[in-house]
Length: 181
Image (cartoon, rainbow, N blue to C red):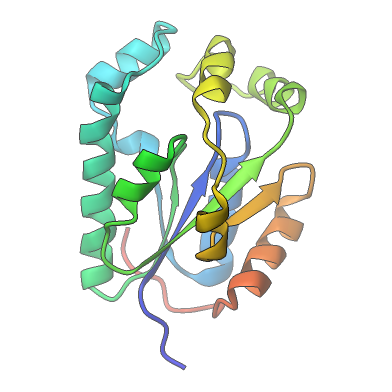
């Protein structure tokens, strides 16, 4: 069976485990993987490093750049796994305009667990002090988005359990030849 290029957007607030799950999915599926953080302009990174929450005007160019990357990958026949907070439905709508099938995987969990994870990680520019603003901004997947195939995932499960759940729920082929990121 031939599958159209698919983009799995692993979404959620900082510290929810996006990078861990994306890497595991990419490895299991053989798909190109990218971190949305790599698409941020330096001005955005500077703001976040200083503990300043990004506004929509900061995010739109960043999201457009991600959408362009996804489309470029789809045009070469490559499926992707991408980490992106995608906190608002309007952000997800823009990303959904990429060529190919776009599926959002919302890593959902309690603020306490996420806060603990953020405290335990090193070398990331997003300080734990921005978690409350991310939680306030987060618009969970709507019923419409869930009905279209996106998934809400419980972050208390192991990465292996989450990968198995995603592969099974979306009936994804595993072990494909990797595409260039």
